[in-house]
Length: 268
Image 1 (cartoon, rainbow, N blue to C red):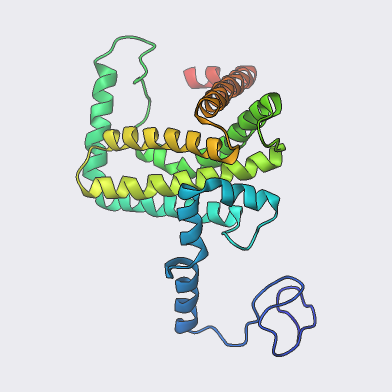
Image 2 (image 1 turned 90 degrees about the horizontal axis):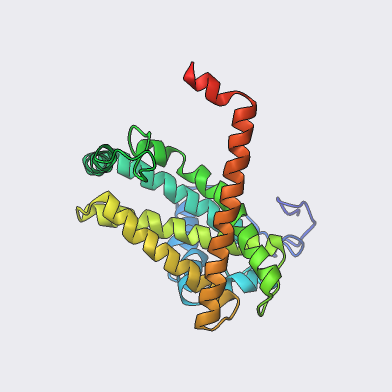
């Protein structure tokens, strides 16, 4: 018989393909088969998803450094984990739009009142959004676009300082994809849980953002095996470089918009 994935010839009694590692499928799809697969992937106590999620808290260096060094079976693949996280974002947005519309509208009105109470043109609350839907709609896209910027920032700092590990840009992409996937999952879960307890969405966003920054510092410290003060210095440098890269990108986008007459089109 042949492997259904890579078409390599395998023995009839083989449970896995020796070439690509895929499981040998002998039975047709039935409800119990799907239930078993869902249980193995997400619900059982020893499944990879739960193990990856827990260990990214307990020992992120083992998950991330292990994947970079070649350990690919113990935890969920980095892109698969990120895909699961983006799926949770979709579920989060659906639940928020379906069951927490009042809470979101109330928080948004608070935000708009902060804007109207200030006459400063540089008011940080000066936003041009109609609702939080405008943010939620592009949330996944923002996550995807931000990852390369964080990866570039951490790579540049890593290249200059050279701590215990000198990773290339692709390896920093892996680090930041795992980190971002974990952050997305944390944000999705905590946002829904806190909303269920009736907390204001602005308060939730503030609390979650603080936890995210702490977790980012913790991840970099553990991955590069830094002590406390070196870890703080490394993290602060990454954030400064991230801000500078973001500023440069913003200037470039403004110049492009100006060159193509985008602002003139808005005025008309």
